[in-house]
Length: 274
Image (tube, rainbow, N blue to C red; front, side, top):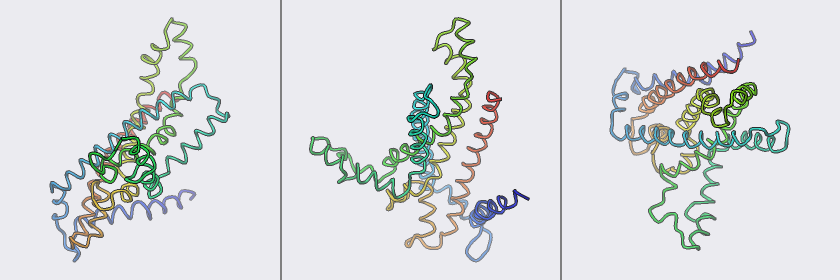
């Protein structure tokens, strides 16, 4: 009985919207069944949008995972109840959720065309927009995405790093192993599943992000979530609202594959935490 409220919550806010989104991709406005919307996924423009979203998500996930793992490594030996650990834990929790319009405004105010750093660099003879206004296009999403990917990596990967048993370090030292040999033969193999799982989680986080991209690139549809918005709200291409359901179907397929791999990797990582 205690799970009933949670089940109702999932059904109302996750299952029902998913079913409605998917079903709308296979039906016209008059309720007739059609493959037209799903066939639109083969359109070169939509395929390019999916490719752009995939490489953007993969790039920011890899960079965020590497930088976050380095931060976690630097925290080895820091007291759990110390001030430094408390500050980093709090900052990671806040910054991992700091997105949307607020994050977009922060980057516009800092490195926008008339941003603080842009003006200072321009006065020093460095023009970061010499080759175009990249901040308001797909490449401009890389820095904002990394901004919240790194703290998310710290949150999800630090417990795995702390789960390394001191007995393994002692056994390695007893057998004459060095620090490098410990990480190469013990630490990295044990942490590999957790690192890969965290990487997949970061990819899913970036792939589904919407608000920051919508605030920065409001005049374009460079990623799939913005394409869905355009299909729902466009005033120039009418009668394509159901295309949003087909685009959502493509996103759900990608997310299902990623999260299935994440579940498999996490199952393997759990073996070392028993």
